[in-house]
Length: 156
Image (spheres, rainbow, N blue to C red):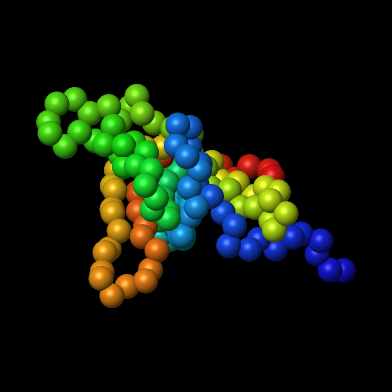
């Protein structure tokens, strides 16, 4: 029997966070979580008849930083968020007060949300402006790297 699940097309997706205008994403990577196993690759002990004891067990979850490349516009709220979290001139950093519940959302051709990944307590640790080249006709972009405290794929 054929699947009735709709295929997600990677051409209609957006980055959203409170206080920021919705961003059209050019590229996103790092939407991943991992629970590395402990003990599975080592012998933990030995019993009668030289039987080795091995047991793989999950450890704490690790989240990968999420890298988002968006279309650059005259709006500079993305850079301002980075600056608010990372003072470059010394003094106290305000990253803790500026964390946001951010998301990456995929829409279908009719504009209906079909998939969403939520980033819990996210804040930017790196900002990268566009590569500007006189002979290029590429759209300018901004890239931001986010760390977060959790990743959830939520129902559409």
